[in-house]
Length: 424
Ligand code: COA
Image (cartoon, rainbow, N blue to C red; front, side, top):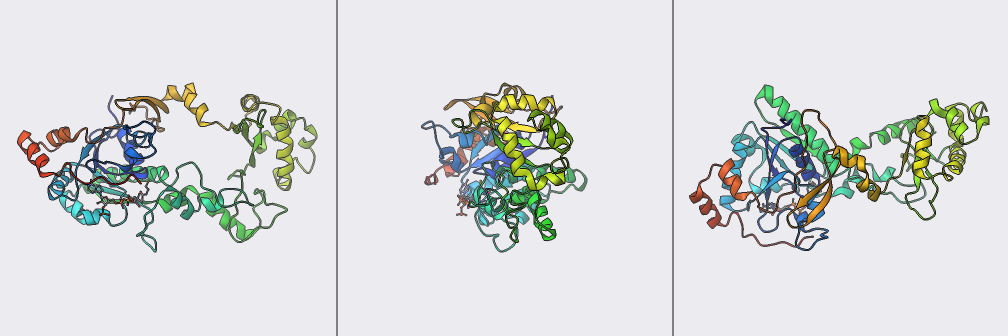
């Protein structure tokens, strides 16, 4: 069976997380992704957070599946010659270097476009045009500058970053969408275009509901926030703890075993249509008709008391027992699943969301497979490439080099020879 992006060839200059997550996704959708890496070192993450000596780290292997690796010194004249050749035969160039790096390398958009007018050139940067455009950015910087940190955490604590990599992987997803849209537009214009996804913009897009609340704040207190009705609101959206970001109040509640298990909790949503059922299950049938509890608006100033009461019930059940009971009545809820539980969950293995992959130097490891399922474009997760594993193959099959040419480039030092850098 074919795959959605069959025939699309990607020149992948990405490193660390934001860019690699984008090109990994495109590879899973069928693109041929050629990852260009610095000779001798490669993507810096190959050596970061290593758990197995002398093997590529999980950081790298979980972000670079289904790619081919070629090593080229992009500062070497012969390396630049190779890149020119690759730009001419690829459809998309993706990079997430620091600001100004591709330009210093000699491949600004104008040049890339002149070399191959059909090429889509896609970049992740920390910021879009503006006061911070020259800044380097990592995940948590983006979370802080994109509005996530100021709105995450509890009211009486400091801003918090989230474990979800919304700055890196989130922006990689945005970029991937931009790339496929540009490829689609190319089918009518015949031309490539520039695609930019800034991490600050991506995080803000994912925090859209908080910008919504910022504007609602001008018209009165945010009645679904835990600050309502007893605590004061300032002029910016406060941190809402575990309150739901939507119109149906929710909170995280303790379950049986919470004293020793840090994940014995459940997220409980008091969705209005199932309020009667909730009252019956927790033994508070009087609340069904009581004017202080019967209607959603009446409940808003009493949410703390309501969730405390529901928690008395959830504490008598394990999170899975609570989930089973609540789901019988369509009451939206979600047990807090640990990474251990997710890694061992059979249904995720079955759908390919969690996949075991074999690797020649590190052995078997788990990775998160393609979370996007297409009925006519199956994903087979293949291990990440070793550094430079496909250099010869790419020179020969993609650039059409013969043995003499390959030997010439090898001898030039363009495929190796740069000094190693410290991992961090
Ligand atoms: N051969 C030779 N040199 C190479 C090379 C290769 N194959 N690949 C990269 N390099 C060089 C570049 O030319 C550049 O050198 P220069 O600064 O002398 O021009 C350097 O390596 C890479 O620079 P940079 O991208 O700035 O790396 P960094 O490690 O200093 O910074 C980031 C890392 C992530 C902070 C930065 O790349 C960045 O801000 N990226 C954009 C935002 C982003 O994606 N952040 C999230 C990362 S998960």
